[in-house]
Each structure stands twice: as structure tokens, then as C-alpha cells.
Length: 264
Image (cartoon, rainbow, N blue to C red):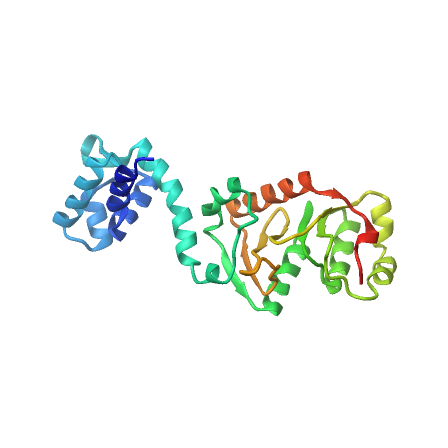
């Protein structure tokens, strides 16, 4: 890898004004005077930044003094989201990790950029409930445990036609009385009619909860243990797609569900 050339590209991006210009031009071409007024920067300063970006092949000059992104500039913009997400959440990742995350998902980590960090067990549960309550087409989970108080919501949605697929860890934390409660709710009837599908993973570190509208994502703490006290939540299209693809990956590598492996 040519780190010298790569570091030069980082140098060209090391400016808030230039980054703002790139993302404005990603929306549509613009003139120098327009962006100068928008950023309250002198024409000379904006011109200097444009010259640097033109020389770096990030931007090109078009007719009527309009500037637009080059193919290289557009591609660079797609990568900046990853730096933005990691930078904004670097304090979070001091105490959390994604060591078990397959590289193909880490390369797409920028898709999580437009999300909100939910902090606190009660607030996480509220967001969790919201995902269940607003589901029409499906609810998909990858979890280390499922709070019993949420199972009634799941059963109600499934009875109304919502597809439910659930992946749980073999060493999941299972509360006492779980089986009786599920039996009374009609859970097993829905399971037998294949309206509910379950599978298992040896262990679950990264938790995902999603429907067709929104998703929640929880990374493990620094020791690798599941952490349900904080959640990244969003209804952003790219965030949901990342979570859905991660669920599909887990579903494809999971094993058949075996009740005897769960212990209260």
C-alpha cells in the first residue's frame, strides 16, 4: 500500500470547509460565490480551497463557473461516513468492541452514521418496544436474551400477520417461568404453525432488533459480553439495511433451535 499517496489525500480532507463543500457538491453542482455566502467565508478563501480540491481530482470545473464532484470525489464521500461514525462515537468504543464483526460489515460501518445512541436500560427497552409495536411485515432479532415482558408484544404482532424470526445464544439468560408464560401467550401454537421461526448461535455478542421501519443495534462491552444498556437506534434506510444484512448473515450461519440447551 502506498501510504505516502494515501496520507496526501487525508491532508486534502483535513478541513471542515472542504468537507462541507464536498457534501454540498454531492447534492448538486454549485458556484464559488454561492458557497462563499453559505459558509460566510471570503471569496478568496473559498477559491483557495477549491483550487486544492481541483488539483487533488476531488472536484472539477464545469460550464458557467459551476463546480461538481469527480468520480473520485463522489467515491471519497461514501467513505467519510465511516470516519464520521467512528469519530463521533469514539468514547463509546473505548468501552465496547466489534471484534466478532465480520470484516464485510466493518467496511460498511459508515452506514450506521445516521443513528442515535440510546443510553439506559429503560430507554433501550422503550426503543425496543417501539420496534415491536410498529412492525407490520416482520420482526427479526439476534439476541443474547429476550425480556419476558416483551414477548406479549411479539405474540400480538404475529397473530396480526407479522413474520417473526429469532436467533438466540445457546448460553442465553433465561428467566424462571419462561416456558409457562410462553405457553399461556399462545407462543408455541404460533411456533407449531411456523408463524414463528427460531434458530441458535453458540454465542451472541452483537444484538440486532429490527422491523421494516427501524432498527436497534447493540455492541458488546470491552470484555466481549453483550451490553443491553446502550443501543444505536435509527429509521435511516442505510442503517436498517446494514442491520438486516447482519441478521441474514447470522441466520445463514446459525443452527437449528434446541430447547434443551437453554437453562433457567
